[in-house]
Image 1 (cartoon, rainbow, N blue to C red):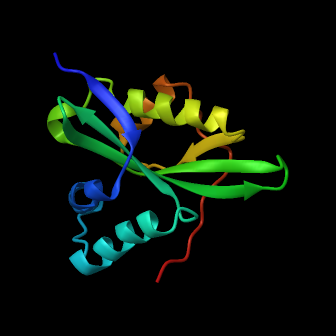
Image 2: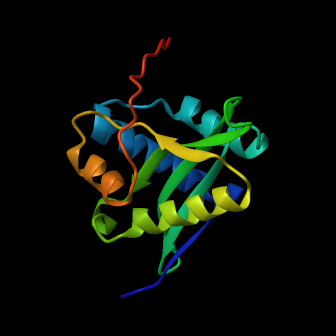
Length: 150
């Protein structure tokens, strides 16, 4: 078995991340993302670190997964809460603990930076993802999410 390495993504990882986002949207929501929009969206994060940061998982020197961290200011905690978004692990590498390693790396980085907590949202029907998050000690929040999207 090879070795997994989690690191902050670099611009050279952008094309891989774009591909992951397209695959995830199709897999989870049966949505085809327009290449130009997702290309610009991913590159916007690399151009402006205030928007967020990507982390990637490398297995045997191949990027096999990624996630995005975005920031929410909490006045109640006088600190940031990091949102984990756009989680994707290639299907052949799922259920092997790779996301857990990514999560633990991000959590440790958050603790080192005084972050108040981590949050994520998940599709209601994505039972496998919900079980994974719960197994890592995350709990379903008492909040209900509402949104407006154009």
